[in-house]
Length: 446
Ligand code: IFL
Image (cartoon, rainbow, N blue to C red; front, side, top):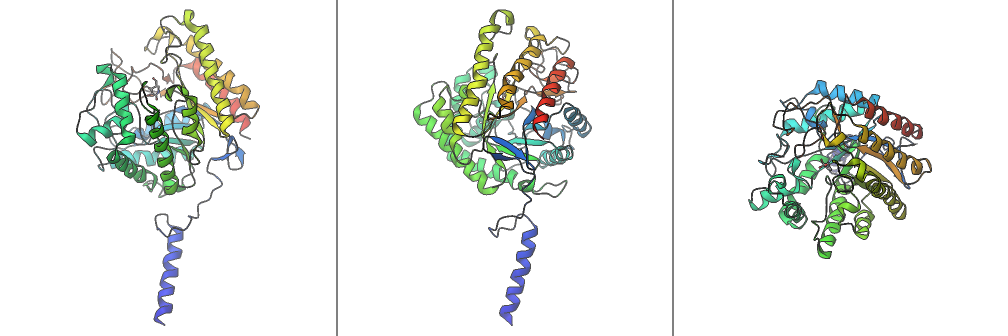
């Protein structure tokens, strides 16, 4: 009799556990799989239909969802509605930031030291997920940053060894900065803490709708970081291997926590892989990396000169076009989809002022879209794009265009002049070009 009572109690506990995520029976969770973005060969699909990404970057979208001073839910709703009207179906968003004292880092931050989280900002992310789902959009959430503007890997290292973070905007020592960021992959303490944060986010239960993140189909992909690189321009063979091992290890960990969502790296492609094609392939061949990512920065990489667009355009664009297509060929070789998840260009003459025309940028967007559309129509592995970035209704009042705490958040992050690459809601000509391309993309999602 006693034994039967125990069995009955166990059965009750088991059935309760089936209906809640978080009970660690080890049993697979009963999640409706149908709506998750999945990989089918070299394409994405969702709810049984092709799913091409017509996306933007909006790293600050979770910040806007907060109810604290940095948040602005009315603005978030307006931005999402505007983006929806543009045919945008995906946002690439920063999930977590690290507090740093240097100027070019966003404030406040999600993490104020190891294990010290700003719950209000995390609730902002919760709110964003609900609003995104309401509009039938998805998000790619990145969990770290190779660059300084959200604290990122360098800030992890500062917490590990107590050495203050260096601002490469001030020191101009980008090589030193990159080496410091990449030392993150080799630090046992940084990795332990990163995994704790990854677990904290991925196993979170949304405070707005009660849904576990692991069950939320609004999340398309967990992304390791924004633009993780193996190191600086002098990266050794050993450091390349450490980077690949890190990707394989952390992606396996994410899949253990959440087997249903896609996982991606956030890599820029060859330019973020010390121009080593084998390294880029190795970094994306692991079984837990579901698709490839790449970014194309024609001016950052010196292929064109913003002070001489006319004189540098032809040769620069030839490199850009080759970069766009050669990565699609690599994806084909690996047999996974690829997303162009960042690209952008300055306003005319490299100005930051919202009133400056965007003729060259518009031409650039058109040309990028034309290059993508050919292989998309043929079913090649290019699975979509995210332009960099959506500034929307944000405006800067700073004469020098540098962000200060309390200013509007926009797609141009605090490490760059506000207005450099972002698209404002008043940029009608660029918006029309984006909308036209998104309409074509949506015709594939039938
Ligand atoms: O703002 C930059 C961002 O950090 C990034 N790639 C390039 C952007 C523009 O310079 O991820």
